Length: 396
Image (cartoon, rainbow, N blue to C red):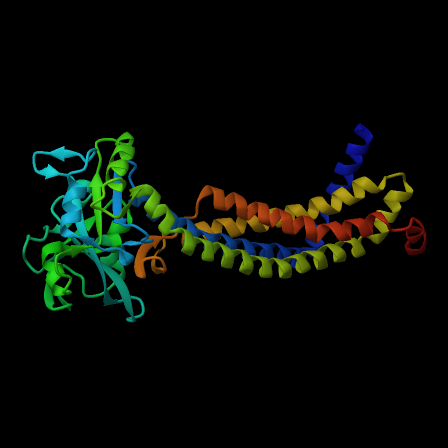
């Protein structure tokens, strides 16, 4: 066993010492792998960033109530009387200001993107005063909160960065109102930062919604109070509602888009990987051909086929690993934290978020690189092991 391992190290060392003689082909193979890994990690970081934003939006001690059968707020509708019953349900947290439940209205408005100037659907959310208590972490960073009963709006930090005309002091006309931006807020990186908020009582007549709402967000006494809260509402004959934890609701809202992105990312990376594998195959076949005499001579001296196979595979894997590390570093430096926005197909509105190049994605990218290196080196390695010893005698 020791002799076999010494053969492996000896042949592998010989291969690596001669890489500089093939540095052009070797560099091309490594950079091909790096390109695949960069694209693979970059595309999947879109899904990771979107999921991170949606996950930050949910709290285990908060719940959302929609009309039964609604998959999102856009599809829901609740009467004013329904929202009062929901706010008074057992399990809802109560403070000196009343119950921590906010009946809300949700519409989308056209706002031009800063990058392209094209209109995009941005959520305009009408909320009640309790919304600031229901959602932890809302902080005004510029200006002030909107005043109840006035045509005033506050804008999430992400929305203000991605779309034009939302600076504090600017005005916009949506529905039947002219709105004045009076503040900008953050929300711990949640999806609320992609939204525009106003008084629900002002938004209703602006869009002729009468006295209706679309959802009720409620802060509960504790995560354990959810079951009591849900059972009370779903068993009430006056209501026809569905109740979800806020965290579960936002997780479900990210499924369609992340599924599309992951599928597209896998397809693109797969197609690029085919090219990278052919590049690795070409490089390793060239390496084997240039060392035909050395390999056959080693076999004549008693080296077995196994060390020869492993040495060629090791060289291919090392080149792939180098390319994978370079690709992962490039993806992290260029894309991690890059701010963008995209359409959430389940709510038909824009969500602003940052690409997230996570440690898991970096590891997956390097594993993908090693897989390409293994495939690219396997067949040349088998060819090297099958070289007849007589070849050495003819070429010496």
